[in-house]
Length: 506
Image (cartoon, rainbow, N blue to C red):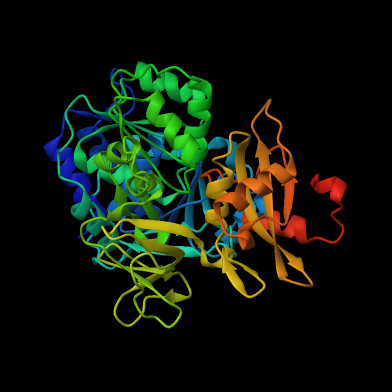
């Protein structure tokens, strides 16, 4: 079953509804189906092995993706923010490609051997082409190739097959479940798995999609208001900027019913601020990975309401949970020997289900013999099955032989009123192996001493979790999807040429 079937169902079931764009001048579901069929003809005439998309969010993105699906060709959206050299490096792994790029990026691609079309030229060519019938593709054919962010290693191309993506949609979305007035605002980057998941799930649900090409908090709030947006997907850094702009008052978002967030760890103060700023809005924490075709666990609206309104610390703590697995997904937390751990014990999170790929182009599958995928996230579960992510296994600090998860220290520090953002990393140390280093961004206008912060942690965690060093920064490095660039921080702080004055250490 291919992605083109999802488009056929949507075009038939929601034909006259607006699928993409504004209420007044958008593209209907039936027109989207027709445009994708004509785009498939353009692709078929060139016979590429891949359709590469390099561009910003916009209505062209789902059109190109579905045209590729109907042509039976793998779709590969690349990060348009990469340098020319980085783009050429990734393109070198995708032989015989048709590259469709926004006009801003076409000039970077002339030296590449593949065929290159501007996005506008592709849309224009598709408008004049006859429609194609959807190509017959096997369920296990590659539908989408997504490169990992490369925050912990060289980017790898994750293989998402048609059966992975359709399994995700059929397990988590009810066909036509959206009312005709519903609209989703999508601001996540088009090269992220959430962009693929949003395009598919909103299409299948019958929901109009409004794209924000470049995130800006003021523009986001304006679109939410002017386009009567009912649901929106954000990453933590986006939500932080939105609530900072809103301030202490409620947001003007009369139609908004749901905010879903994911892609990175959500700071508790940001979430609590958002819950106050959008009092009538449901919140969902969607946890997933590129290798799992998007969401595999959800903390739903009722969970957020119950936790936010509870005086029970155990229930309140669920605001930091990723919730429980979605239908069709099994989750297991294992120790270093591969055995399931007890409730509350930290271990490695493994998941299994039809939507889980766990496969990298040129490297094969990393699933075990029983189909389980190692997420490389450390996690624990409470007695009610709520999952809590403790950080990446690669981020663990080993101090004096003790394994320390940065997340537990970060959660304490970010709760201090003077701390706006924080990252905890390890620095080389001759005596302890690694020192605990907290890189802190202050809240504007609030002063705090190093020893006060160290004492704040010491009072709430074991002494071995107290940061050895506090480093002050104006901001932390993040990817556009909100992931902290820990490798960059570790490299900077471990460089012998980096002086104390350079890192502003107290």
